[in-house]
Image (tube, rainbow, N blue to C red; front, side, top):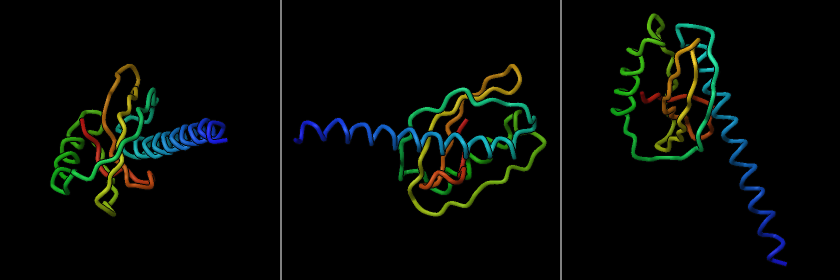
Amino acid sequence: MIRRLIPLFLCLALLTSCDDESKAKKTAKQFLKENLAETSFNIKEVSRLDSTFVITDSIVEIMRQNTSSQPQFTGKKIQWSKRDGSKLRYARIIYKVYDKEFTQTFYFDDKLEKVIAVKN
């Protein structure tokens, strides 16, 4: 009986993981749409999500400042979301703006509804 349940639980875990990654992609896409200097972009890849408790508010602020100075965001005042708790979830996202490709780590809130910071 237990041998039959194990594959079911593994499938459920895989489906949940895929759902979270699609939520992260949707949130990142909305963030890029609102904050990129150019409106034409395409998300090519989203890595597996992970979580961290070690990113401090001062590190978040440094990442935000560094992102604001990146050429793909130049000319726009980035609208950052406020951090709600100590846990952040993150994924490496590869996206293309016209013919130039960017790889950045996006840090989300625990519910994957807001982008807190982006690491270049």
